[in-house]
Length: 234
Image (tube, rainbow, N blue to C red; front, side, top):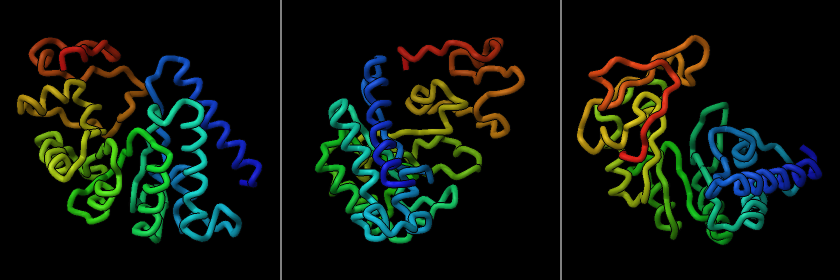
């Protein structure tokens, strides 16, 4: 990307945020994780630039900071969250110096006043997660480690979630468990068993499928997918 393309992309993020809020969304989350574009600028393994957007830690976080600042300026920092994946190596990403770049980025995002941080594959036993909690004064959302491509734990991730809460997370963001358990909150609350994730069709595309049973429908006949799921009682 040229510098002009970077500036144009920053503006695109801000414009997209404005459209989302105008459409009725309460806020937006800037995705700087999982090996996507913003994450690629953070990582030494993919960012080989020699200009103001590459090389040093300060330069490699610049694109992310500029995007988040532009989005915050457009819709207000209280409507902006940021998703990070410190040390995650999916999609060919190798950050290289996570212990250096993550604190610098968290500090910069704090200065912007972003409403929350969303840490994916968060491990409460890792010093880095503990350092993020100490450095971040506002809401911290944590996505628990439940295995990559492996079956869900029998408790649906409740134990992992409780460990993160005990380590200082304010909110927990399960991912795969919700795909097979639209009533996951109720299942975790009551200790009901969870449905396994159907790995062969995570996005429910292609042939018609049957809705994942909830605790209220598991004894009744299943309805064709898609179906409306009641969330007001969860």
